[in-house]
Structure formats: C-alpha cells, structure tokens
Image (cartoon, rainbow, N blue to C red; front, side, top):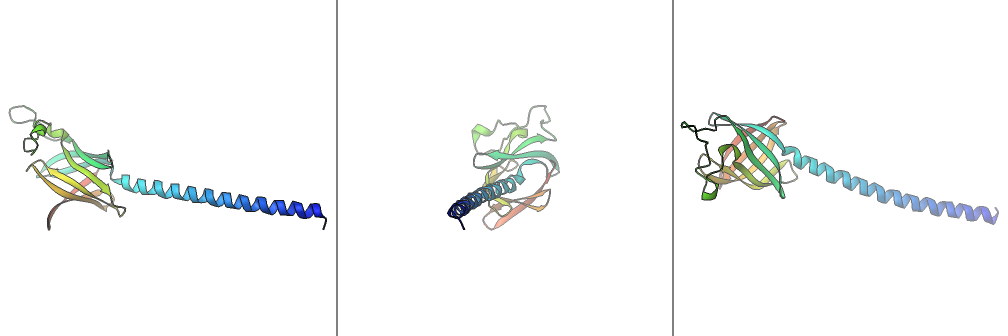
Length: 165
C-alpha cells in the first residue's frame, strides 16, 4: 500500500474520531436541554385558571409563576359587594395593611414549589374566611382536578380546584 494512501486513511480515522466525539458532546447537551425543559413543563402544569367552590360560593383563582415558586390569587368572585353595595375586602387578614384588599384580588397560596414528583409544596395557603394560614400541598388526582391540601400539624382539609384553561 502506498504511503500516501496510508496517511490519507490515518487522517480519515482521526477526523472520524473527532467528529464522533463532537457528536457525542452535542447529543449530551441536547439531551440535557430536553430533560430540563421537560422538568420545567411538568412544574408549570399547575399554571392556569381554576374554578373553586367553597361554602357554596363560586370563585376563579389564577395560579402563576411568582419568584422561585408559584402563587394563587383570586381573580373573580360571584359576589364582590356587601349588602350596602360597598366592595368586600379581606377584613380577617392578620396583616392590617392587607385588610383593604378587594376580595377578588386576595392571594390565597404563596411560595409553593414543584417537588419533582407531580406535587407542589413548601408554601402556605391563606383562608380569607377565617384569616388563618396553613401549610399547603397541591397535586393532581385527575388531569384537570387540583387537590389543594391545607395542613395544620397532623390535621388537614382538602379542596378540589377544577382547571378551566
């Protein structure tokens, strides 16, 4: 075999090895990006508008990204006026500065974070009917039914929020 041909084959194999190494690195980068996007999509599954019924009263609650977690805020109430025609506000809020917030703008859930196992936790839920704050865990039992579990020590209460978009 001529020396030029051997040198040509040697260069081809070196180029082939280098291309293979570069393709392996690119594959790893793409796979990592896809997994990261997939995890973020799973975390954002909670984002949306929900129909909530509590004590026979209808409301709509919006869950959205906020800071490093998620927040749930009332965006619509069936009855926003007092019998005298004035706007209902968050009168039972333990923070006096928040007692003038209109009832259709109350933040219910703060700082929940996705745990990687189809649940959001480590946050708090506020009950405007009592003015109390509880630890909260949220997860989907059914595709469009978010279970919202307020916890106080060993005790808990579940609510079911129906996703409408």
